[in-house]
Amino acid sequence: MPALPVVLITGGTGGLGVAVARRFHSAGHAVALLDRAPLTRECSTALGFSALHAEADVTDRRSVESAVAEVTRALGAPRVLVNGAGIAESGPLLPPDDALFERALAVNVKGSWIVATAVLPAMLAAKQGAIVNVASTASFKAYKYVAAYVASKHAVLGLTRALAEDLRGKGVTVNAVCPGFMDTPMTQRTVATIVRTTGRTPEAARATIAAMNTGGRLVTPEEAADAIVALALDPRRTGEHVVLE
Image (cartoon, rainbow, N blue to C red; front, side, top):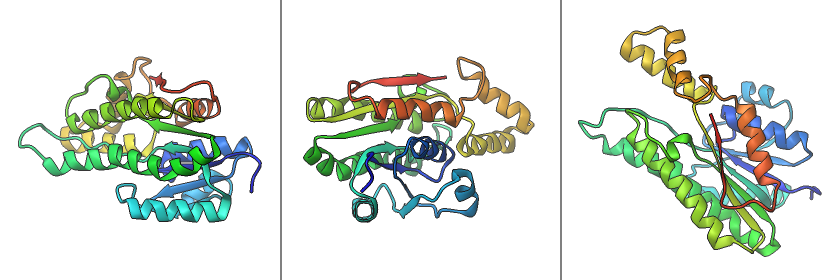
């Protein structure tokens, strides 16, 4: 069993997940990636090291618990959880798309809840653990055409604060990172949607998204990864959120 805490990252094959995995690996941690998507050759190349990959649907508790058991057998019980799995779909308010709303809540909120509560028993038994939820600037302000996403990310920040209070003094910290628009495949898909629906060029669409961040640029996955690692490895901080925009 490794000397440093085992790290479990959901949404681990995405752009942010890869950046977080690389940061923890470089610090000497064993890393496991949990994702519905398979570990592609491109993702493996981006990682630059061999990481355990467990396939699971974060909205399904049985699937998640099976994946956590697999990670525990191979590496040891996760002592750090990064809840990075998430979706960001856009659409008009009317006609209402209930399925889109339910997907946002299921993946972004329920998924964070399921994975956190799946790893918590072992953390509490060891009196050691850290959970970092990937929230968003949409956790405390609104954007057009993404009501479901905004509602779900408000809930993620609320969940973070509530878990932190329940776990205060028990050796487990819970914090959140709230990035604005990031330079990830998720944003690239948003750019493609804008191009398809408005006829703008990809460059113009990307500039429009970047301008929504206070700094006028896209946040890099590495910046968000640094904030996540800092929160996860500081036992003095809990119930906090870090804004990156």
